[in-house]
Amino acid sequence: MLSLTSVRVTYGHAVAVDDVSLELAEGQVLAVLGPSGCGKSTLLRAVAGLERLSAGTVSYDGSDLAGVPTHKRGFALMFQDGQLFGHRSVGDNVAYPLRIRRRSRTEIAQRVEELLELVGLAGFAERVPATLSGGERQRVALARALAVEPRLLLLDEPLSALDKSLRERLALDLREILTRAGTTALLVTHDHEEAFAVADRMALMRAGQLVQDGALVDVWEHPVDAEAAKFLGYPTVLSGDAARVVLRAAGIDSAGQVAMRRSALQVREDGPLTGAVLSSRVTPDAVRLEVDVPGVGVVAAVTSDGVGAPSPGADVHLGVDRDRLAVVPDAGSSPRFP
Ligand code: ADP
Ligand code: MG
Image 1 (cartoon, rainbow, N blue to C red):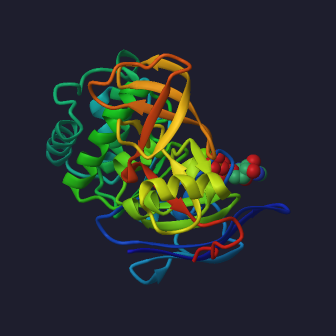
Image 2 (image 1 turned 180 degrees about the horizontal axis):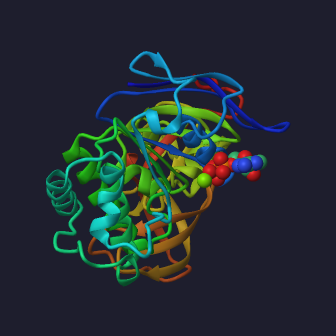
């Protein structure tokens, strides 16, 4: 397995990766999630051996990789833009890493067919990248990265260049492909949905440091602080009295801040909270409301199935869906990870 211990990477006096330790077991997919500029690509490059460590170690199966050059690590890299050879066919692109390893013609032909099948591009071997969609190009890049069965696949925002609907679909495909091939993978991304769709484990990164690390659902359900919650896709984090009111209404007996998804509050006849509707908007998924709840403030809410859109000014009762909120430790009280 991959193991990072107190890894530090600096550019001049700037520290890009600061004291990062993490482990990744064989066959698992870990997503490192963090905002742009927090050091994700640098971390990935350090693992690949493309960036010198100024402290710490990267090891695989117990052996330190310090003296091992990139091409001898047995890792493969895939980037946001795929970096295909534009003048070569899809088949040649996928075959490339096998050719430079001098595999036989028959083996290459068979493996290329297998890989294109795996990524859902059977029959595409003769096409050139310019004739493919963005999603298809990323699948070719993935097939090429998997060609030599790397013991670790490193993915740098592999889906970020794609439009939203394609990204969602390909994220799920990517997970299935990695699982089916049994690939151990480290993915870095700024997109929490991509991380949730693809990974088994997640690490949150901020300003060069890891702030949280755990199984996907643990991180999702227990963000370490308000900033982490927002980055995980909770648009609202309440604190103080507002949080207390919502927690009490949810029947949750702990103290702290409350991170809420937009659908955490739902219009319900018997709901414990009451507020005045400020606005309502019908969307394909739900009727989205802004409601002014005394003691809480202006919050997002949705209507439940079968309830029509209330007009602005109307009073509504709101229930709290415990599965759509997370309790976040109060600022100052949260022990820093690890
Ligand atoms: P991310 O991938 O999370 O967007 P990066 O790892 O690319 O972040 O960058 C982390 C920090 O290191 C940024 O402040 C960036 O400007 C800096 N950085 C990245 N690469 C270099 C480099 N080759 N030389 C100097 N600074 C760099
Ligand atoms: Mg990057």
